[in-house]
Length: 536
Ligand code: C2E
Ligand code: MG
Ligand code: MG
Image (cartoon, rainbow, N blue to C red; front, side):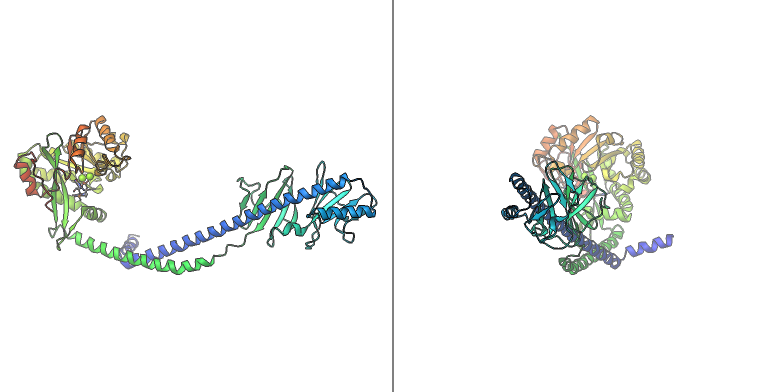
Protein backbone atom coordinates (compact mmCIF):
# COMPACT_ATOMS: atom_id res chain seq x y z
CA UNK A 1 0.00 0.00 0.00
CA UNK A 2 2.71 2.57 0.91
CA UNK A 3 4.51 1.56 -2.31
CA UNK A 4 1.38 2.31 -4.36
CA UNK A 5 0.99 5.65 -2.63
CA UNK A 6 4.64 6.45 -3.35
CA UNK A 7 4.19 5.59 -7.06
CA UNK A 8 1.10 7.78 -7.23
CA UNK A 9 2.98 10.59 -5.54
CA UNK A 10 5.86 10.31 -8.00
CA UNK A 11 3.38 10.52 -10.90
CA UNK A 12 1.94 13.70 -9.48
CA UNK A 13 5.41 15.22 -9.48
CA UNK A 14 5.83 14.67 -13.22
CA UNK A 15 5.15 17.82 -15.20
CA UNK A 16 3.93 15.88 -18.26
CA UNK A 17 1.49 13.84 -16.22
CA UNK A 18 0.13 16.97 -14.51
CA UNK A 19 -0.14 18.80 -17.84
CA UNK A 20 -2.06 15.94 -19.47
CA UNK A 21 -4.26 15.64 -16.41
CA UNK A 22 -4.99 19.38 -16.42
CA UNK A 23 -5.70 19.31 -20.17
CA UNK A 24 -8.03 16.31 -19.85
CA UNK A 25 -9.80 17.85 -16.88
CA UNK A 26 -10.23 21.23 -18.51
CA UNK A 27 -11.40 19.62 -21.78
CA UNK A 28 -13.98 17.57 -19.89
CA UNK A 29 -15.09 20.56 -17.88
CA UNK A 30 -15.29 22.85 -20.91
CA UNK A 31 -17.22 20.34 -22.98
CA UNK A 32 -19.54 19.34 -20.17
CA UNK A 33 -20.07 23.01 -19.32
CA UNK A 34 -20.86 23.99 -22.90
CA UNK A 35 -23.11 20.95 -23.34
CA UNK A 36 -24.95 21.91 -20.18
CA UNK A 37 -25.38 25.49 -21.43
CA UNK A 38 -26.55 24.25 -24.85
CA UNK A 39 -29.05 21.83 -23.30
CA UNK A 40 -30.27 24.51 -20.99
CA UNK A 41 -30.85 26.77 -23.99
CA UNK A 42 -32.78 23.98 -25.76
CA UNK A 43 -34.95 23.53 -22.69
CA UNK A 44 -35.49 27.25 -22.40
CA UNK A 45 -36.53 27.64 -26.03
CA UNK A 46 -38.78 24.57 -25.70
CA UNK A 47 -40.53 26.01 -22.68
CA UNK A 48 -40.79 29.47 -24.27
CA UNK A 49 -42.40 27.88 -27.33
CA UNK A 50 -44.81 25.87 -25.16
CA UNK A 51 -45.73 28.91 -23.08
CA UNK A 52 -46.45 30.90 -26.23
CA UNK A 53 -48.44 28.00 -27.68
CA UNK A 54 -50.45 27.65 -24.47
CA UNK A 55 -51.24 31.36 -24.41
CA UNK A 56 -52.32 31.30 -28.08
CA UNK A 57 -54.56 28.31 -27.43
CA UNK A 58 -56.11 29.93 -24.40
CA UNK A 59 -56.90 33.13 -26.29
CA UNK A 60 -58.43 31.14 -29.15
CA UNK A 61 -60.51 28.98 -26.79
CA UNK A 62 -61.90 32.04 -25.04
CA UNK A 63 -62.85 33.57 -28.39
CA UNK A 64 -64.32 30.30 -29.55
CA UNK A 65 -66.39 29.55 -26.45
CA UNK A 66 -67.62 33.14 -26.44
CA UNK A 67 -68.92 32.84 -30.00
CA UNK A 68 -70.50 29.41 -29.44
CA UNK A 69 -72.36 30.66 -26.37
CA UNK A 70 -73.50 33.85 -28.11
CA UNK A 71 -74.76 31.91 -31.12
CA UNK A 72 -76.75 29.57 -28.85
CA UNK A 73 -78.23 32.57 -27.03
CA UNK A 74 -79.33 34.00 -30.41
CA UNK A 75 -80.93 30.72 -31.46
CA UNK A 76 -82.68 30.27 -28.12
CA UNK A 77 -84.02 33.82 -28.27
CA UNK A 78 -85.63 33.52 -31.76
CA UNK A 79 -89.20 32.06 -31.85
CA UNK A 80 -88.75 29.23 -34.38
CA UNK A 81 -88.85 25.59 -33.25
CA UNK A 82 -89.02 22.60 -35.58
CA UNK A 83 -87.27 21.72 -38.82
CA UNK A 84 -88.76 23.76 -41.65
CA UNK A 85 -86.98 25.78 -44.34
CA UNK A 86 -87.09 28.89 -42.18
CA UNK A 87 -85.20 27.06 -39.40
CA UNK A 88 -82.53 25.81 -41.86
CA UNK A 89 -82.12 29.39 -43.10
CA UNK A 90 -81.77 30.62 -39.48
CA UNK A 91 -79.18 27.96 -38.72
CA UNK A 92 -77.27 28.90 -41.88
CA UNK A 93 -77.44 32.58 -40.91
CA UNK A 94 -75.99 31.82 -37.44
CA UNK A 95 -73.11 29.85 -38.95
CA UNK A 96 -72.57 32.75 -41.35
CA UNK A 97 -72.64 35.38 -38.56
CA UNK A 98 -70.26 33.57 -36.24
CA UNK A 99 -66.92 32.69 -37.75
CA UNK A 100 -66.21 29.85 -35.35
CA UNK A 101 -69.61 28.15 -35.68
CA UNK A 102 -69.02 25.44 -38.25
CA UNK A 103 -72.30 23.65 -37.72
CA UNK A 104 -75.56 24.71 -36.05
CA UNK A 105 -78.44 22.30 -35.46
CA UNK A 106 -81.91 21.98 -34.07
CA UNK A 107 -82.99 18.67 -32.51
CA UNK A 108 -85.97 17.38 -30.64
CA UNK A 109 -87.24 13.88 -29.90
CA UNK A 110 -88.18 13.19 -33.52
CA UNK A 111 -86.15 15.50 -35.72
CA UNK A 112 -82.64 16.74 -36.34
CA UNK A 113 -81.81 19.46 -38.82
CA UNK A 114 -78.58 21.32 -39.40
CA UNK A 115 -77.05 23.92 -41.68
CA UNK A 116 -74.97 21.02 -43.06
CA UNK A 117 -77.59 18.37 -43.67
CA UNK A 118 -75.35 15.79 -45.34
CA UNK A 119 -72.95 15.56 -42.47
CA UNK A 120 -73.18 13.30 -39.48
CA UNK A 121 -71.45 15.75 -37.15
CA UNK A 122 -74.15 16.69 -34.72
CA UNK A 123 -76.40 13.70 -35.12
CA UNK A 124 -74.89 11.88 -32.17
CA UNK A 125 -76.90 11.78 -29.02
CA UNK A 126 -74.46 10.81 -26.26
CA UNK A 127 -74.90 12.64 -22.94
CA UNK A 128 -72.81 15.83 -22.52
CA UNK A 129 -69.31 15.65 -20.98
CA UNK A 130 -69.96 18.78 -18.96
CA UNK A 131 -73.42 19.86 -17.96
CA UNK A 132 -73.61 23.45 -16.80
CA UNK A 133 -76.73 25.35 -15.66
CA UNK A 134 -77.20 26.96 -19.08
CA UNK A 135 -74.94 25.22 -21.54
CA UNK A 136 -73.89 21.63 -22.08
CA UNK A 137 -70.52 20.69 -23.53
CA UNK A 138 -69.53 17.75 -25.72
CA UNK A 139 -65.82 17.30 -26.24
CA UNK A 140 -63.93 15.45 -28.92
CA UNK A 141 -67.05 14.72 -30.85
CA UNK A 142 -65.09 13.13 -33.64
CA UNK A 143 -61.80 11.34 -33.79
CA UNK A 144 -61.44 11.47 -37.54
CA UNK A 145 -58.49 13.56 -38.71
CA UNK A 146 -60.79 15.79 -40.77
CA UNK A 147 -60.15 19.47 -40.16
CA UNK A 148 -63.81 20.22 -40.90
CA UNK A 149 -65.31 17.76 -38.48
CA UNK A 150 -66.55 18.99 -35.15
CA UNK A 151 -64.16 19.05 -32.24
CA UNK A 152 -66.24 20.86 -29.65
CA UNK A 153 -69.98 21.10 -29.32
CA UNK A 154 -72.14 23.31 -27.10
CA UNK A 155 -75.83 22.91 -26.51
CA UNK A 156 -78.66 24.97 -25.06
CA UNK A 157 -82.27 23.79 -25.15
CA UNK A 158 -82.92 22.20 -28.54
CA UNK A 159 -79.99 23.84 -30.21
CA UNK A 160 -76.45 22.62 -30.78
CA UNK A 161 -73.50 24.52 -32.23
CA UNK A 162 -70.09 23.05 -33.01
CA UNK A 163 -66.75 24.35 -34.06
CA UNK A 164 -64.46 22.54 -36.43
CA UNK A 165 -61.11 21.01 -35.61
CA UNK A 166 -59.52 23.44 -38.05
CA UNK A 167 -60.62 26.44 -35.98
CA UNK A 168 -58.53 25.16 -33.12
CA UNK A 169 -55.51 24.03 -35.05
CA UNK A 170 -55.15 27.00 -37.39
CA UNK A 171 -53.70 29.01 -34.49
CA UNK A 172 -51.28 26.43 -33.20
CA UNK A 173 -49.42 23.72 -34.96
CA UNK A 174 -49.94 20.84 -32.56
CA UNK A 175 -46.88 18.59 -32.87
CA UNK A 176 -47.43 14.83 -33.35
CA UNK A 177 -48.17 13.07 -30.09
CA UNK A 178 -49.53 16.25 -28.47
CA UNK A 179 -52.98 16.70 -27.01
CA UNK A 180 -55.23 19.46 -25.85
CA UNK A 181 -57.18 17.99 -22.97
CA UNK A 182 -60.10 19.02 -20.86
CA UNK A 183 -59.60 17.51 -17.42
CA UNK A 184 -62.85 17.00 -15.58
CA UNK A 185 -62.84 16.94 -11.76
CA UNK A 186 -59.11 16.34 -11.98
CA UNK A 187 -59.72 12.68 -12.82
CA UNK A 188 -60.92 12.33 -16.42
CA UNK A 189 -59.04 13.79 -19.36
CA UNK A 190 -60.91 14.14 -22.63
CA UNK A 191 -58.85 15.12 -25.63
CA UNK A 192 -60.32 18.06 -27.53
CA UNK A 193 -57.49 17.69 -29.99
CA UNK A 194 -54.85 15.05 -30.49
CA UNK A 195 -54.39 11.64 -28.98
CA UNK A 196 -55.95 10.56 -25.71
CA UNK A 197 -53.62 10.47 -22.69
CA UNK A 198 -53.45 8.39 -19.54
CA UNK A 199 -54.72 10.48 -16.65
CA UNK A 200 -53.54 11.34 -14.09
CA UNK A 201 -50.10 11.50 -15.70
CA UNK A 202 -47.30 9.26 -14.47
CA UNK A 203 -45.48 12.38 -13.26
CA UNK A 204 -46.28 13.50 -9.68
CA UNK A 205 -49.65 15.22 -10.05
CA UNK A 206 -50.83 17.84 -9.26
CA UNK A 207 -47.33 19.38 -9.39
CA UNK A 208 -45.99 21.21 -6.35
CA UNK A 209 -45.02 24.25 -8.38
CA UNK A 210 -47.72 26.72 -9.33
CA UNK A 211 -46.03 27.45 -12.68
CA UNK A 212 -48.28 26.93 -15.69
CA UNK A 213 -45.59 24.85 -17.39
CA UNK A 214 -44.21 21.57 -15.99
CA UNK A 215 -41.16 20.11 -17.67
CA UNK A 216 -40.59 16.41 -17.18
CA UNK A 217 -38.07 13.99 -18.66
CA UNK A 218 -40.20 13.20 -21.69
CA UNK A 219 -42.85 15.87 -22.05
CA UNK A 220 -44.07 19.37 -21.41
CA UNK A 221 -47.37 19.86 -19.60
CA UNK A 222 -49.01 23.26 -19.79
CA UNK A 223 -51.96 23.97 -17.50
CA UNK A 224 -54.30 26.67 -18.77
CA UNK A 225 -56.25 28.50 -16.11
CA UNK A 226 -60.06 28.51 -16.43
CA UNK A 227 -62.73 30.31 -14.43
CA UNK A 228 -64.52 27.05 -13.78
CA UNK A 229 -63.14 24.89 -10.92
CA UNK A 230 -64.80 21.80 -12.42
CA UNK A 231 -62.53 21.56 -15.40
CA UNK A 232 -59.02 22.43 -16.38
CA UNK A 233 -57.45 22.81 -19.80
CA UNK A 234 -54.17 21.01 -20.28
CA UNK A 235 -51.83 20.98 -23.24
CA UNK A 236 -49.40 18.04 -23.37
CA UNK A 237 -46.52 17.90 -25.79
CA UNK A 238 -43.72 15.32 -26.06
CA UNK A 239 -40.29 16.87 -25.76
CA UNK A 240 -38.50 17.48 -29.02
CA UNK A 241 -35.69 15.23 -27.78
CA UNK A 242 -32.53 16.65 -26.30
CA UNK A 243 -30.72 17.05 -29.58
CA UNK A 244 -27.23 18.37 -29.13
CA UNK A 245 -27.44 21.76 -30.83
CA UNK A 246 -25.35 22.17 -33.98
CA UNK A 247 -23.42 25.07 -32.43
CA UNK A 248 -22.08 22.75 -29.76
CA UNK A 249 -20.06 20.76 -32.26
CA UNK A 250 -18.07 23.94 -32.90
CA UNK A 251 -17.33 24.19 -29.21
CA UNK A 252 -15.71 20.76 -29.34
CA UNK A 253 -12.55 21.77 -31.26
CA UNK A 254 -12.50 25.10 -29.39
CA UNK A 255 -12.53 23.25 -26.05
CA UNK A 256 -9.76 20.93 -27.23
CA UNK A 257 -7.57 23.87 -28.29
CA UNK A 258 -8.20 25.59 -24.98
CA UNK A 259 -7.45 22.37 -23.09
CA UNK A 260 -4.13 22.02 -24.91
CA UNK A 261 -3.30 25.62 -23.94
CA UNK A 262 -4.19 24.90 -20.31
CA UNK A 263 -2.04 21.76 -20.38
CA UNK A 264 0.87 23.71 -21.85
CA UNK A 265 0.50 26.43 -19.23
CA UNK A 266 0.43 23.88 -16.43
CA UNK A 267 3.55 22.25 -17.90
CA UNK A 268 5.36 25.60 -17.87
CA UNK A 269 4.21 26.46 -14.36
CA UNK A 270 5.07 23.06 -12.91
CA UNK A 271 8.50 23.14 -14.52
CA UNK A 272 9.10 26.67 -13.27
CA UNK A 273 7.93 25.69 -9.82
CA UNK A 274 10.03 22.58 -9.77
CA UNK A 275 13.13 24.48 -10.77
CA UNK A 276 12.32 27.10 -8.09
CA UNK A 277 11.80 24.25 -5.62
CA UNK A 278 15.14 22.73 -6.52
CA UNK A 279 16.86 26.10 -6.27
CA UNK A 280 15.22 26.85 -2.94
CA UNK A 281 16.35 23.58 -1.37
CA UNK A 282 19.98 24.59 -1.83
CA UNK A 283 19.45 28.28 -1.03
CA UNK A 284 20.42 28.06 2.65
CA UNK A 285 23.43 25.89 1.90
CA UNK A 286 24.62 28.30 -0.78
CA UNK A 287 24.14 31.25 1.57
CA UNK A 288 21.52 32.91 -0.62
CA UNK A 289 19.11 33.59 2.22
CA UNK A 290 19.57 36.62 4.39
CA UNK A 291 17.69 38.07 7.30
CA UNK A 292 16.69 41.73 7.40
CA UNK A 293 15.21 43.63 10.31
CA UNK A 294 12.35 46.07 10.02
CA UNK A 295 12.38 48.35 13.07
CA UNK A 296 9.29 48.72 15.23
CA UNK A 297 8.74 52.11 16.81
CA UNK A 298 6.98 53.62 19.78
CA UNK A 299 4.50 55.92 17.98
CA UNK A 300 4.62 58.64 20.67
CA UNK A 301 8.31 58.84 21.46
CA UNK A 302 9.43 57.57 18.01
CA UNK A 303 11.99 55.35 19.78
CA UNK A 304 12.84 52.01 18.19
CA UNK A 305 11.64 49.27 20.51
CA UNK A 306 12.48 46.25 18.43
CA UNK A 307 12.37 44.76 14.94
CA UNK A 308 10.73 42.10 12.86
CA UNK A 309 13.06 39.57 11.25
CA UNK A 310 12.22 39.19 7.55
CA UNK A 311 13.76 36.68 5.17
CA UNK A 312 15.13 37.61 1.76
CA UNK A 313 16.27 35.27 -0.99
CA UNK A 314 18.88 36.75 -3.26
CA UNK A 315 19.40 34.42 -6.23
CA UNK A 316 22.86 33.93 -7.79
CA UNK A 317 21.84 36.17 -10.71
CA UNK A 318 21.20 38.98 -8.23
CA UNK A 319 17.39 38.89 -8.42
CA UNK A 320 15.50 39.16 -5.17
CA UNK A 321 12.61 36.71 -4.71
CA UNK A 322 9.78 37.90 -2.49
CA UNK A 323 9.07 35.88 0.66
CA UNK A 324 5.42 35.96 -0.40
CA UNK A 325 6.49 33.64 -3.22
CA UNK A 326 9.03 31.33 -1.61
CA UNK A 327 7.62 31.05 1.93
CA UNK A 328 4.39 29.32 0.83
CA UNK A 329 6.50 27.02 -1.34
CA UNK A 330 8.81 26.20 1.57
CA UNK A 331 5.74 25.58 3.73
CA UNK A 332 4.50 23.05 1.18
CA UNK A 333 7.78 21.22 0.87
CA UNK A 334 8.55 21.33 4.58
CA UNK A 335 11.74 23.37 4.04
CA UNK A 336 10.21 26.11 6.16
CA UNK A 337 11.43 24.40 9.37
CA UNK A 338 14.97 24.67 8.18
CA UNK A 339 14.36 28.31 7.28
CA UNK A 340 12.86 29.21 10.67
CA UNK A 341 15.88 27.61 12.36
CA UNK A 342 18.11 29.59 10.04
CA UNK A 343 16.38 32.89 10.94
CA UNK A 344 16.66 32.16 14.67
CA UNK A 345 20.29 31.17 14.43
CA UNK A 346 21.25 34.07 12.17
CA UNK A 347 19.44 36.67 14.26
CA UNK A 348 21.20 35.60 17.46
CA UNK A 349 24.54 35.48 15.68
CA UNK A 350 24.05 38.96 14.24
CA UNK A 351 22.18 40.68 17.04
CA UNK A 352 23.06 38.61 20.14
CA UNK A 353 25.46 41.23 21.42
CA UNK A 354 23.05 44.10 20.71
CA UNK A 355 20.26 42.29 22.53
CA UNK A 356 22.49 41.59 25.53
CA UNK A 357 23.44 45.25 25.68
CA UNK A 358 19.82 46.44 25.25
CA UNK A 359 17.63 44.23 27.42
CA UNK A 360 14.48 46.20 26.46
CA UNK A 361 14.99 45.52 22.74
CA UNK A 362 13.19 42.59 21.13
CA UNK A 363 13.11 40.87 17.75
CA UNK A 364 10.04 39.16 16.46
CA UNK A 365 10.22 36.11 14.24
CA UNK A 366 7.52 34.89 11.83
CA UNK A 367 6.43 31.30 12.41
CA UNK A 368 4.78 29.09 9.83
CA UNK A 369 1.79 26.85 10.58
CA UNK A 370 3.97 23.74 10.90
CA UNK A 371 6.28 25.52 13.38
CA UNK A 372 3.31 26.09 15.67
CA UNK A 373 2.12 22.50 15.48
CA UNK A 374 5.12 20.95 17.26
CA UNK A 375 7.09 22.02 20.38
CA UNK A 376 10.36 21.95 18.37
CA UNK A 377 10.75 25.77 18.12
CA UNK A 378 10.80 26.14 21.91
CA UNK A 379 13.65 23.61 22.14
CA UNK A 380 15.72 25.17 19.33
CA UNK A 381 15.17 28.62 20.82
CA UNK A 382 16.15 27.56 24.35
CA UNK A 383 19.41 26.11 23.06
CA UNK A 384 20.26 29.26 21.09
CA UNK A 385 19.29 31.63 23.93
CA UNK A 386 21.57 29.77 26.34
CA UNK A 387 24.38 29.81 23.80
CA UNK A 388 24.06 33.56 23.19
CA UNK A 389 22.98 34.50 26.72
CA UNK A 390 19.90 36.38 25.53
CA UNK A 391 16.67 36.61 27.57
CA UNK A 392 13.60 34.81 26.24
CA UNK A 393 11.51 37.99 26.53
CA UNK A 394 13.68 39.53 23.81
CA UNK A 395 12.41 37.09 21.19
CA UNK A 396 8.77 37.32 20.13
CA UNK A 397 6.95 35.00 17.77
CA UNK A 398 4.43 36.04 15.12
CA UNK A 399 1.75 33.61 14.05
CA UNK A 400 -0.98 34.30 11.54
CA UNK A 401 -4.62 33.38 12.08
CA UNK A 402 -4.31 31.01 9.12
CA UNK A 403 -1.37 29.35 10.87
CA UNK A 404 -3.55 28.18 13.73
CA UNK A 405 -4.86 25.12 11.92
CA UNK A 406 -5.31 22.91 14.95
CA UNK A 407 -6.13 25.42 17.67
CA UNK A 408 -5.82 22.99 20.55
CA UNK A 409 -2.27 21.92 19.65
CA UNK A 410 -1.27 25.46 18.65
CA UNK A 411 -2.60 26.88 21.93
CA UNK A 412 -0.54 24.38 23.92
CA UNK A 413 2.69 25.16 22.05
CA UNK A 414 2.16 28.92 22.14
CA UNK A 415 1.44 28.75 25.86
CA UNK A 416 4.69 26.84 26.37
CA UNK A 417 6.57 29.64 24.54
CA UNK A 418 4.89 32.27 26.71
CA UNK A 419 5.64 30.28 29.85
CA UNK A 420 9.38 30.60 29.27
CA UNK A 421 9.05 34.36 28.62
CA UNK A 422 8.54 34.80 24.86
CA UNK A 423 5.87 37.11 23.55
CA UNK A 424 3.31 35.79 21.09
CA UNK A 425 1.88 38.11 18.41
CA UNK A 426 -1.00 37.54 16.01
CA UNK A 427 0.25 38.73 12.62
CA UNK A 428 -1.90 40.20 9.82
CA UNK A 429 -4.79 40.42 12.24
CA UNK A 430 -8.16 40.96 10.58
CA UNK A 431 -7.40 38.99 7.41
CA UNK A 432 -8.30 35.62 8.95
CA UNK A 433 -11.24 34.29 10.87
CA UNK A 434 -10.34 35.22 14.46
CA UNK A 435 -13.38 36.43 16.37
CA UNK A 436 -13.30 38.20 19.71
CA UNK A 437 -14.53 35.09 21.51
CA UNK A 438 -11.90 32.97 19.78
CA UNK A 439 -9.17 35.48 20.47
CA UNK A 440 -9.90 35.41 24.18
CA UNK A 441 -8.97 31.74 24.29
CA UNK A 442 -5.57 32.22 22.63
CA UNK A 443 -2.39 32.78 24.64
CA UNK A 444 -1.29 36.00 22.89
CA UNK A 445 0.24 39.30 23.97
CA UNK A 446 -0.20 41.48 20.96
CA UNK A 447 -2.16 42.00 17.73
CA UNK A 448 -0.49 43.24 14.55
CA UNK A 449 -3.07 45.06 12.44
CA UNK A 450 -2.64 44.13 8.78
CA UNK A 451 -1.34 46.76 6.38
CA UNK A 452 -4.56 46.59 4.32
CA UNK A 453 -6.53 48.19 7.17
CA UNK A 454 -3.89 50.84 7.75
CA UNK A 455 -3.93 51.65 4.00
CA UNK A 456 -7.70 52.03 4.17
CA UNK A 457 -7.54 54.69 6.87
CA UNK A 458 -9.05 57.81 5.33
CA UNK A 459 -9.52 56.14 1.91
CA UNK A 460 -11.79 53.18 1.69
CA UNK A 461 -15.00 54.01 3.57
CA UNK A 462 -16.00 50.36 3.93
CA UNK A 463 -12.80 49.13 5.57
CA UNK A 464 -11.46 52.33 7.16
CA UNK A 465 -13.56 51.52 10.20
CA UNK A 466 -11.90 48.13 10.68
CA UNK A 467 -8.63 49.38 12.23
CA UNK A 468 -10.35 51.37 15.05
CA UNK A 469 -12.59 48.36 15.64
CA UNK A 470 -9.56 46.04 16.02
CA UNK A 471 -7.85 48.58 18.27
CA UNK A 472 -10.86 48.78 20.60
CA UNK A 473 -11.17 45.02 20.61
CA UNK A 474 -7.50 44.64 21.58
CA UNK A 475 -7.86 47.29 24.28
CA UNK A 476 -10.86 45.45 25.71
CA UNK A 477 -8.75 42.28 25.87
CA UNK A 478 -5.74 44.20 27.25
CA UNK A 479 -3.58 43.25 24.28
CA UNK A 480 -0.82 45.39 22.82
CA UNK A 481 -1.30 46.62 19.25
CA UNK A 482 1.31 47.05 16.53
CA UNK A 483 0.18 48.73 13.32
CA UNK A 484 1.90 47.36 10.19
CA UNK A 485 2.71 49.18 6.96
CA UNK A 486 2.49 52.79 8.14
CA UNK A 487 3.52 54.93 5.17
CA UNK A 488 2.09 58.34 6.04
CA UNK A 489 2.42 60.67 8.97
CA UNK A 490 -1.37 61.10 9.05
CA UNK A 491 -1.79 57.35 9.62
CA UNK A 492 0.73 57.41 12.48
CA UNK A 493 -1.01 60.42 14.07
CA UNK A 494 -4.46 58.83 13.76
CA UNK A 495 -3.28 55.48 15.20
CA UNK A 496 -1.53 57.24 18.05
CA UNK A 497 -4.71 59.23 18.83
CA UNK A 498 -6.63 55.94 18.91
CA UNK A 499 -4.26 54.62 21.57
CA UNK A 500 -1.98 52.43 19.39
CA UNK A 501 1.45 52.45 20.98
CA UNK A 502 3.60 50.75 18.35
CA UNK A 503 4.02 50.74 14.60
CA UNK A 504 6.28 49.68 11.76
CA UNK A 505 6.33 50.85 8.18
CA UNK A 506 8.21 52.65 5.49
CA UNK A 507 7.40 56.00 7.13
CA UNK A 508 9.98 55.07 9.76
CA UNK A 509 12.24 52.52 8.11
CA UNK A 510 12.26 49.71 5.59
CA UNK A 511 13.80 46.32 6.38
CA UNK A 512 17.46 46.92 7.31
CA UNK A 513 20.55 44.76 7.28
CA UNK A 514 21.89 43.72 10.70
CA UNK A 515 24.66 46.31 10.41
CA UNK A 516 22.17 49.10 9.64
CA UNK A 517 19.88 48.00 12.45
CA UNK A 518 22.78 47.93 14.97
CA UNK A 519 23.76 51.39 13.77
CA UNK A 520 20.20 52.62 14.27
CA UNK A 521 20.14 51.36 17.85
CA UNK A 522 23.62 52.31 18.90
CA UNK A 523 23.66 55.61 17.04
CA UNK A 524 20.85 56.95 19.24
CA UNK A 525 17.35 55.53 19.48
CA UNK A 526 15.70 58.60 18.08
CA UNK A 527 15.20 58.30 14.33
CA UNK A 528 15.96 62.00 13.79
CA UNK A 529 15.18 63.29 10.32
CA UNK A 530 17.19 60.60 8.59
CA UNK A 531 15.21 57.95 6.76
CA UNK A 532 16.64 54.53 6.58
CA UNK A 533 16.08 52.48 3.48
CA UNK A 534 15.86 48.79 2.78
CA UNK A 535 19.31 47.44 2.31
CA UNK A 536 18.03 44.86 -0.13
P1 C2E B 1 4.57 40.07 7.44
O1 C2E B 1 5.09 39.23 8.54
O2 C2E B 1 3.22 40.66 7.62
O3 C2E B 1 5.66 41.15 7.18
C1 C2E B 1 5.36 42.46 6.87
C2 C2E B 1 5.58 42.70 5.43
O4 C2E B 1 5.15 44.01 5.13
C3 C2E B 1 7.05 42.62 5.02
O5 C2E B 1 7.10 42.18 3.69
C4 C2E B 1 7.46 44.07 5.09
O6 C2E B 1 8.59 44.37 4.29
C5 C2E B 1 6.22 44.72 4.54
N1 C2E B 1 6.10 46.12 4.98
C6 C2E B 1 6.41 46.64 6.17
N2 C2E B 1 6.14 47.93 6.22
C7 C2E B 1 5.64 48.26 5.00
C8 C2E B 1 5.17 49.49 4.41
O7 C2E B 1 5.15 50.56 5.01
N3 C2E B 1 4.71 49.44 3.13
C9 C2E B 1 4.71 48.25 2.43
N4 C2E B 1 4.24 48.27 1.17
N5 C2E B 1 5.14 47.09 2.95
C10 C2E B 1 5.61 47.11 4.22
P2 C2E B 1 8.05 41.01 3.28
O8 C2E B 1 9.35 41.13 3.94
O9 C2E B 1 7.98 40.95 1.80
O10 C2E B 1 7.36 39.76 3.90
C11 C2E B 1 6.15 39.30 3.41
C12 C2E B 1 5.62 38.18 4.27
O11 C2E B 1 6.46 37.03 4.15
C13 C2E B 1 5.63 38.49 5.74
O12 C2E B 1 4.52 39.24 6.07
C14 C2E B 1 5.62 37.11 6.34
O13 C2E B 1 4.29 36.60 6.36
C15 C2E B 1 6.42 36.32 5.36
N6 C2E B 1 7.77 36.19 5.89
C16 C2E B 1 8.82 37.02 5.77
N7 C2E B 1 9.89 36.50 6.41
C17 C2E B 1 9.49 35.33 6.99
C18 C2E B 1 10.13 34.33 7.81
O14 C2E B 1 11.28 34.42 8.18
N8 C2E B 1 9.37 33.25 8.18
C19 C2E B 1 8.09 33.12 7.81
N9 C2E B 1 7.42 32.04 8.22
N10 C2E B 1 7.45 34.04 7.05
C20 C2E B 1 8.14 35.14 6.63
MG1 MG C 1 5.11 39.29 10.38
MG1 MG D 1 1.94 41.17 8.81
